[in-house]
Image 1 (cartoon, rainbow, N blue to C red):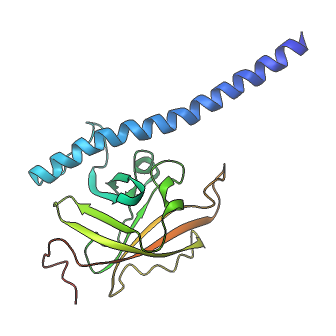
Image 2: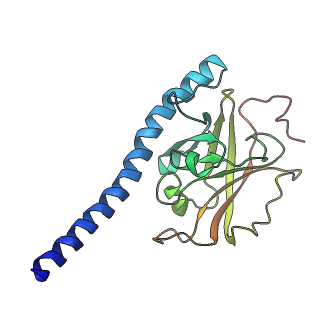
Length: 197
């Protein structure tokens, strides 16, 4: 009896773990569909539009790297709840196009999976909720502890940082973060808060 029960318990546990992992990925894909719709409405109306009625966040930007066919909608805030559905704009950092370092964070196995394929020189486009698009050039990357990033959001430059957990293929989370650094090129449109010196 024990010989039969043990494999069944292991099979059941394996199926539950697989189902949980698949659920996370399915949720991430479906959320991005709803977020794209809400972001389009936000840009068109100029008002924050929640992707679903009970959401405690809303889309504020779109990150795109055409060479990699990477395209993802960013949410306001970087809480664990927000990151389950998309990248988050880290609190107290500037918006894309503003002086300083705009920082966006996401999970390595869903929305920022493409970061491992970004190379120096890649163009990263960030469209804000006001419809303005800003172009950044990937300069390089680093791996740092989560509590020792060295990022100064109030820098005098116009920069972008995309960050996720490291290493990319790890199963569990750890203290290290992968940090992709980029510098803004001339914006498509200029505004008073996005003038280059």
